[in-house]
Image (cartoon, rainbow, N blue to C red):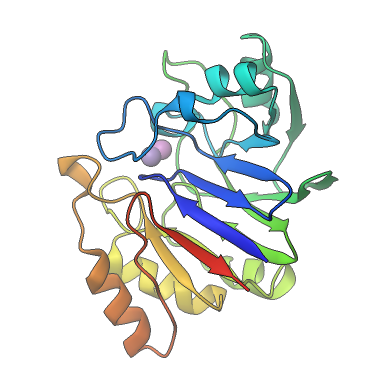
Length: 228
Ligand code: NI
Ligand code: MN
């Protein structure tokens, strides 16, 4: 069993009852976040998809306070280790089993400079296996045909977390196509409505995925979804 809590933008918390992991903890600067960075007292790991400020977010402060292991690409782990975090570097196509579960990095078509213009390697997506469930977090990306490979070779996926906000990532129409490529049991929209530039209607995404024969759930910030 795996409970997925949404904290707004691309930040999700994964909890299997014994271990907890965060992806892309952008909380302090996010007007829609339901929790602050100080609300995490114990945490096993923080996974970061790419270097942009709305994804690295509060990773350093949370990791240092909780002792959580930072898992990301080589360059982002080195950047966070320079700030006093402990980390484990991976790179695209590589995976590793940790005490909390397995993390594999996938391609994403996007950028990855750091908050001050640092070169922080390639942007990534993540396939996280935890609590007996397999979840794909796309990070920030445009649509790509290899999403079929992610679903087929590294699935079957119990859930896919997909950006819908357009401008920097896929729009709703592309995310609906992504959902069909991935074939996940359930799809959850992310990366929308945090800023004016990425306004999108998550209910439109849900309706269009379901019209195409898939399943989607809109999880509001503070809400959660449990994969049984
Ligand atoms: Ni980005
Ligand atoms: Mn972003």
